[in-house]
Image 1 (cartoon, rainbow, N blue to C red):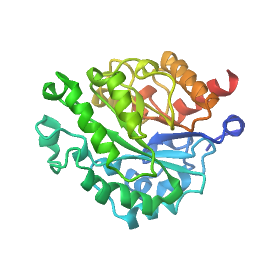
Image 2 (cartoon, helix red, strand yellow):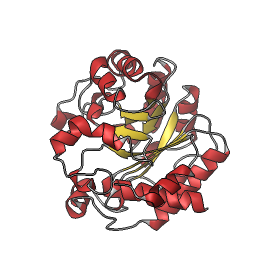
Image 3 (cartoon, helix red, strand yellow):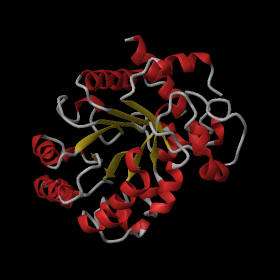
Length: 298
């Protein structure tokens, strides 16, 4: 369980900084987050309430919604397990963000609803707004690699993305995460701005440095996901880092970059949402603790 040092660091963090991990069902977090060793399935069903008691964590990235849509009742069940100050970052259903002719879309047999605003509104946004209420922090549209059809001439995709975002219901914070650096640039940023959406800056092998993906100034929340050690892929990193109970490969360079982004966002009065994955350094809770220590000592 968290010791007094963790509590002291957490106490010094600003209220508009939301720190969370990518999911919560990892038995290897015993002694770090959980007081006893529990299995994956038990943690998936009942671990969120214990996770939300950790002093550092006032947010979590809900990943299961990327693979299937959830009902309002299911979402409300999650919300009932966390305090009112807690925020959910929710990955939208992958059918909305996987181009239908890509290998990923075929492999996962996603519904053919790519950038379908009506489907997104009905099956994703409205249930999230009703189920989570004010505990809904960010709806994240994570785009898998789109392929040459879209990246050769990104302008057409950017225009369609802007139309999609502008057609969504007002209210929630919408963020876009990419895996194709070719799409980045002023045209992309303008499309997001026109819809009141933001870019999710990610530490990922396919993307430029996390602090160089979009212009530093911006409005709306600042959204960051620290997903992978540079040069890694999910499968090899996960196999090497399991059971995720220690920092295997500390990434001080990206820790400093993210701390700098956070400081700039907070200074500008923006809400800042940061998610860390186990595959970033070996253990997401310990990654966030070291990041928090960096923030409070700068």
